[in-house]
Length: 154
Image (cartoon, rainbow, N blue to C red):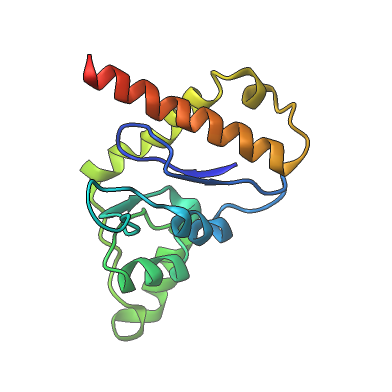
């Protein structure tokens, strides 16, 4: 289960892969699925910032975010920093900027996963086919959105 989380622990996009699939290759497919409806006009597809853990710190992910003008709040792995420093000032590039205040909000993904697991079918992984797993995730995600909307109106 690979997913994105909005600041209020709402799931705008998710994908399901086999258990042995790595996290970093799923970064772009999840970002491409994000569609946030606005009151007027087309849905928004570009977030202002993306906070992720070190598993997503690949150069390809950073280049993609930079091209789309999205702030990357992803810490650099120690081996990536060592390779950059080993190349020297001319060929090594700049160190990665890291906004600690935005990175603290990365726990919204963990909190969203806990809210999704409140539903028994997702927590126990009884769904064996990808289609039924995605259906369960989308159903629970829509329930989370509706709960938040009802809470906001009361």
